[in-house]
Image 1 (cartoon, rainbow, N blue to C red):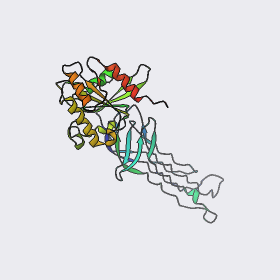
Image 2 (spheres, rainbow, N blue to C red; image 1 turned 60 degrees about the vertical axis):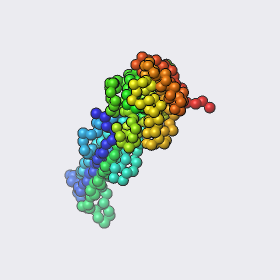
Image 3 (cartoon, helix red, strand yellow; image 1 turned 135 degrees about the vertical axis):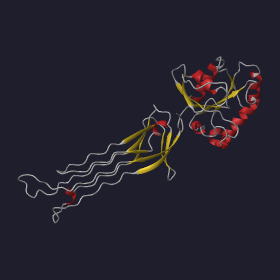
Image 4 (cartoon, helix red, strand yellow; image 1 turned 30 degrees about the vertical axis):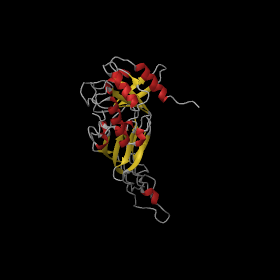
Length: 331
């Protein structure tokens, strides 16, 4: 199950109570106060882990609670610290305070951590309250409560190239051809219901991460079809691969299909619409595709790469274009 949004409650552990105790030992009359401190409550920590690509594993519990610290004891023994709770999320997870709508952290890099809720401090035992005039204090502090939050988690996948286009343009077929990913492929629209990631390997052992998104239709920015539910996943991409079905059997004529997707991008985010783009005409092995490529170029799509994701035609040129477009510019 794919999950890219989640509401979650987390609570850090409470601090342990301080102890009221007096030394009772042979040959030590009036030994004085020796109550130990309470242990600190456990923290709630989030960590970005590249072994995860969804938030679904966090849906099984409504509340994640860290362990509270133990109470102090005699002989100045401090209570044991409470165990922390470590929640692992995919890189690209945004953590917000759901009640205040405040951004707490954007976990972009694998291994990055943040303490979301800190455990309560343990209370002091009566050993700390002894003075020259009050040598037998019967006072100790309770532990402080741990922090508690209601969080909203939002996943924005981190990829180098985002594959976009109308339904049935061949995005999943292209991803399967360029990488080891095996998304669902069928001859009907909206086969892809969740984003898929794949790794494209170059001849020099360099790699690119590709993200295949569900098809975008007219009115997607208003919630039609799958709407803008998954468009957030290409906001972090460095390059857009705009795939257009150039055959006569396409859902829309190539030029119209190109304009439809561009309009939806502009309506959703002008910044995203300004991202670098490689326009690819798919199904170039079918009848009428040459006219579709010409129509795309006249519609302002620029230097269109004609390919066939099924036969492999033009894929070498496309791979070279992707790597050259993302190669750092030497000054």
